Length: 313
Ligand code: RUB
Image (cartoon, rainbow, N blue to C red; front, side, top):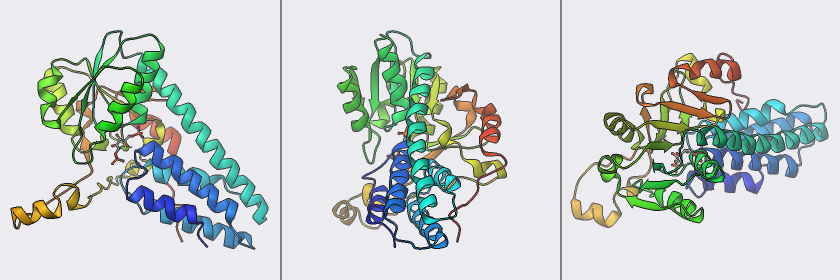
């Protein structure tokens, strides 16, 4: 039987009540923890099967952020033992370790990313990324003054969450509509974004609009830094798989009433896009910063020759 937390978490991820790659990963680990704690399986085989079912339910919510399957992989790989009790104990230990690693990775990444920011710099942000904000937070802790131009990020306006966080830290914020980005690039020193997945060739998959921003930033000579802990490296791309781009509901773009006014138009609503490596200056991870083209070395070191599917039936 699936624990209610698994169903709730899966729904929350699908509905974007829980969103952002790192936050999704943490929620998935928490849900697996609840499944392990509440399981009434009476054999090891039944326990394992329940955990795999829970992992599949969570995985099938949003397809683009690889942190989700990477989190599930981490926990299921560590699940071991000959009795239900041993399996439960090892799973709970794995979820705790995973959360600790996530926190440490974000802190370490933040400290590395902060080195790229100088006192008095203005950054431009897109969407809301906790990894990107960790770099700003560390720079502020180093005593640097930072200002931000925050892109609204249609259609879901995650820029508002970024602005709220930055204001909590007393960072001066200028909010602009997405279409104003190129105009304001002349006023900024860095573009700082996060990632949902990084492919083996160094391509960055992030919120729709990131690639347009990166191309404009390159044209204006503004460096683009991607803050992404290694949990965002997509192991399947090592074997040539491409990253699936999530298509979201049309009503995020046009309400039913607007649609009725416009008549018969098609709407497409991709949630993410792919920024080619040549537009990215640095990928900042907890293991150091890398030119995008060399990220494959780190990926092989961490994931071997590709991802496993421990949730498979
Ligand atoms: C969020 C998004 C974020 C990355 C990184 O998209 O694109 O930039 O997930 O976030 P959505 P973090 O709002 O559709 O989930 O650095 O917090 O992992």
